[in-house]
Length: 377
Image 1: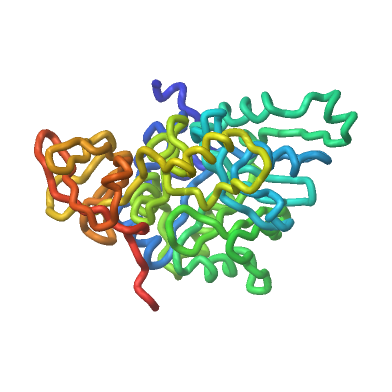
Image 2: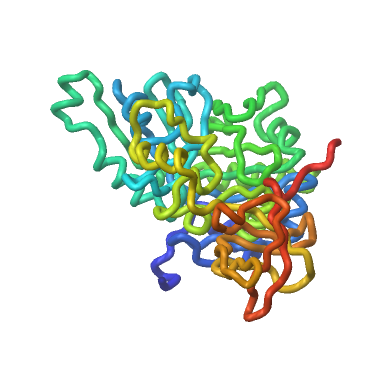
């Protein structure tokens, strides 16, 4: 896809002004880094960093039947959500494959915000619309459902790191209470209101802030200015990837796909099979009963060498047992790390494996997730 066809977030000009290296990503021009991936990664691990997540999709689902209908579309249990809280969940196809992983927030009694992956926004919206209850059935049953794709008019930032609460108070006021983990609250900001959720994709404490696109630049610059005492850094996709991979958080399109289900991905915790019905449930029940053929495992290289990358073969005793889905050089651990689908018989923590990199085999070991563990403070 040419750069002409790439979309720009409301913060594009700010990224360019700050000297970011811009790259195409999921149909958008996004910063891959500003000063460097390792520096930005360490800022998030040790102080605070800010990411533009305006490329991600935002849907509003509401109506008298919204909660009940969403529970048939997503794997996690919406009924466990209090108003003002969120949960991680999956949108599946009929084969149990992962169309997308997302966060759903219950922002009212029958009012929900879905934050979905940028590359999947249009497909997710089409899938959800296709499965809306028919107008006649909805009206006669009193369970109307509406879904609105507000992505084009809204933006978001993720502010992540151990100094995030200090920065929250600096930006929004000392008297404003930050949300608890997985909570979402509306807070005043510069004569408007923004939504702040205590969530993230880095393994550090963090918030994600959602706002009208017209407020994006003002909020971004306020965070950078107020964050100076906390050594804030703007961060790009590169650091986002190394941070999430150290935590073994999956990336849609790499570790998750329509050919893989959440049980294979080791994410059954976010699937409520006790629910009577949701799309893909029967396949997941069967997978759980007979066991998955392959499992997503984390691994660490045991010798220095080129970092592992997607599609590299995983080998044991000269037999190909799987394939790498994500890999990088971990800035925190200073080792090559990654995730791979391997046959279940070989997916044992502590097992010795080899990663085939450009015709050479390098020793690695299957590790318990997450790969990065914070030392006790």
